[in-house]
Image (tube, rainbow over the protein chains, first blue to last red):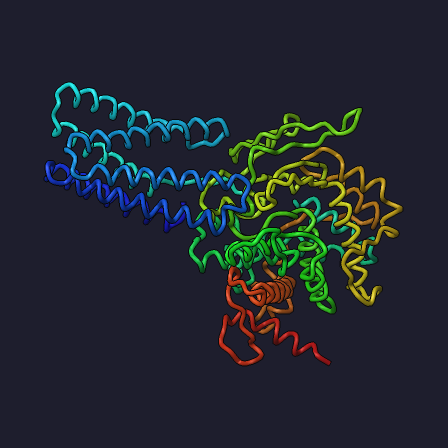
Length: 180
Length: 387
C-alpha cells in the first residue's frame, strides 16, 4: 500500500465515523441525508467508470465487464434516489442490504484470493463473515421488533466497525507480488 | 530476462563478437547492473538518483501513482526494460489520445528506438555497450507489454496456455497463476506466480509483464494468451526463438560497436558467428529450468578459456565512493551512470516528441533551458568527446 493509499484509507475511515455519529445522534433525520450522499457517490463513481470504459477499457480484452459494472452502479444510484421520501425503516433495510452485499463480495474475494495463493485472504474473509452475520442479525431483530431505531443504531455500529478496520489497514505492513 | 541471460549469455555473445575476456566481463557486468541500479543503491553511493535503471519491490510498493510518480516509473521501465517498438503506432480501431499514448509504449524488437539505443552506445565506454545489450535483449523477452502501469495494455486473463511438444505436434496445457511471493514457480504442473489482478488502470500490479508472471523471463517456454490490447486475437510467444534472435542480434550489435559493421540495421542477426556453437546455445535455451546460469557460464568459460567471476554488486562501489568528486565520472559506476542518463534522456525525449507526456517533459539543455542537473552530464561528456 502506497503512502497516498494509506492517507486515503484514513480519510475514508474518518468520514465513515462521522456518518456513524450523525446517524446515532440524529436517528430520525439523517437516513434521507445519507441516502442522498450514497446516491451522489454512486452517480459519480458510475459516470467515472463509464468514461473510463469509453476512453480506454472498450479496447481491452474483458473491458465489457467495466461497462456492465458502470451501468449496474448507475441503476443502483437511480434506485437509491427513488428511496428519498420513504420511511426511515425502508431506507435502513436498503442500507443494510448494501452492507450485507458488500460482506458477501468480501467473502467471495477472500475465497478467490485463497485459491490464487495470496496471503492476505483470512482478514478479508473474517470481515466479510462479520458483515454478513451483522446484517442478518439486524434484519431479523429489526423485522421482528419493527423498530427503526434498532436498525439505525445497529447500522451505525457496523459503519463504525468498517471505519476502524480501514484505519487499522492503513497502518498495516503490506506485501506485494511484483514480477521484476 | 534474468541474470542467466543478462550476465552469462551476454558474456558469451561478447566473446563471440570479438571482445577480450576483460572487456566481456565489463559488458556483462553492466548489462546485469541495469536490473539492480535502483534509487536505494544510488542514494548509498551518493550518485544522482535520476540515473536509476530499475525499481526494487520495496520502492515499487511505496511508489506514487500520481502523475509525477507515474512519469518516473515510465521513464525507468520504458527506457531500460520495455523499449517501445513504434512510437507512431496506431491501434486498428479509432481510440482516445490517452489510450493511444499507452498503446504506443508497447515493447517489441527491431524498433526505431532500438537502433537509436545501440547507436547511442557507439564510441562510448563499454558500460554503455552493456546497458544497450540489456535493453536489446529485453525487447525480445518483454514483447507485447508496456513499461508503464496500465490495465488496458498489460492485463491478462484466464486464457493462458503453455505449448508443450507432443508426438503429434504441440499440446496446450492450461497455465494456473497464483500470487504467493514465497512459493517458487511449479514448472512441472504449469503453476506460476503473477501479480494480483487490480481493476485500477494505474495500479503498480499492472506494470510490465507482472500479470504474466515470470513467463517472459524463461527462455524455454512457449505460450499462447490474449494480450489486453490485441482485441481478442490470440498471440503465441515463442521464447526459444526470441532468445535465439536476441543472442544473434547482440553479437551483430556488438560487432557494430567494435567498428566491424559501419552501420547498425534492425532485423540483422549474426547467425554465421553463432553457427559453430548453435547446438549448445539451443540446448541451453530450450532446457526446462528456471535458471540457466550454470550452463551459460560453462559455455562462456569454454569460449574464452577464462573463469567468469559471479556477479558481485559490491565490486565497484568502493571505487566510486572513494573517488574525488571530479573523478567519479571516470570510475566504472560513473561511466555506467552517464550511459544510463543518456539513454533515459533519449527515450524520454522520443516519447515526449511523440506527443505523450507519460514519461514527463523533455527539455533541451543545449538551448539553455532549466532542468534536472543530473541530465546535463551526458551533454557535457558528448561535447568533450567531440573532435
